[in-house]
Length: 315
Image 1: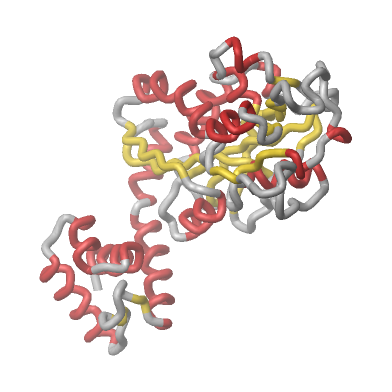
Image 2: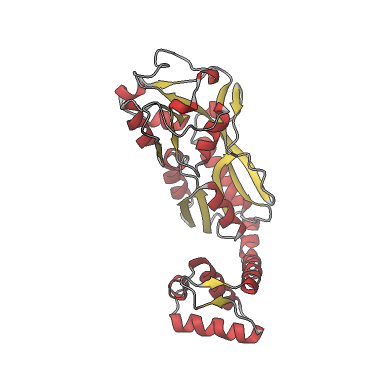
C-alpha cells in the first residue's frame, strides 16, 4: 500500500463521492477507483459502500481511514521539522475562524501578514466550533481561532485577547437611557440572539443565566439569525436589544447607530479568544507568527482580562 492510496481513501471519506475525491486529488475517477479497489483486494475488506448515495465508509473502513490520516500526517512531518528548524514561514497552513470573530479580526491582520510571509499558502475558512473540532481531529485543520475555554482533550488553547460584550439598545427599549448596563438588568426574553450553533449565543445565555422563551415581547414572533448585521437592523425596528462583540462595535461607522451602543459596568462580561491546535502540531513557528500578528491587530487593553469577567462558550 502507498501514501497515494491513503490520500485517495481519505479524500473519498471526506467528500463522500469518488468523482469529487478524484477531482480533489487531481486524478481521473477510474484511476482513483482502481487504486482503492486494489487496496481493498489486498486487505480483503470493503472500505466503502458504493451502493449508498452519498458513498458511506464501512465500519472497518472508518478505522483504516483514521489510521491513514495518522500516517499521512506523520509523513508530512519531515518537511515540517526541517522548516521549523530553519524558522521558515512557508508551505500550506489551514486556519479556521468562527463566524462571530472572522469579520472583525481577519481584515485587521491578514493583508500585512500575507505580505510579510509570501511563501505561506494560508487557507482560511469560517466554520462553527463543533465543525472546527471535528476537522481538527481528522487532521484537516492546522489551527483555529475561536472562543474558549473548551477543555478539549488533545487540543492546546493559547489565549490571544479578551473581547468585552457590548449592548446594542434601541430608543424603544427600557434600557436605552442607561449609560452603563448591569448584567442583572438583562432579560434574555427581550433580547435578539444568534441562532443555535453559535458559541456567542451560548455565552449570552450563560451570561443571563436563563433559557429562551418561545415567544418574544411582540407575542407572535421569535427571532434568531446567523449574523449580527441582521440582529442590529431588527433591534432598530423595535424587536428588542442585542449583544455584540467589542470589535464589531468599533466597526460600526454610522453615527446614528453608534448612539445605541452601551458598555457594561465593571467587571465587563467578555469572551476569551484563543488560537487552538492539536497537541502534536509541528507548525508551531507559524502559529507563533499568527499569534503575534493577531495580538498586534487588537487594542492593547484587550490583551489581558483585567476588570473583565470571562463568560465561557459552552452551553
